[in-house]
Length: 98
Image (tube, rainbow, N blue to C red; front, side, top):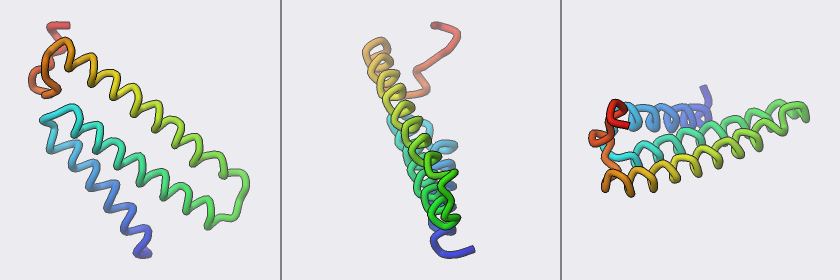
């Protein structure tokens, strides 16, 4: 495994562990998801460049578009949660009360 692949793999795993273990605020969960998506985007872009194939050239842009959509939906949920519950703590959210 090259150092570049190791760096992006470790960035993805760090984002995943942050998402799994530090679930106190919704904003921290969204930041971990964005870090994971950024590492996937860069890894997919480098993979496309290494293959020198034009068939996969649209995949990084498609991933980036879905990442932007995920970020906007997450921020909309953050604003809606902050307005209704008064906080963005994940412990205050209960699906049974909705």
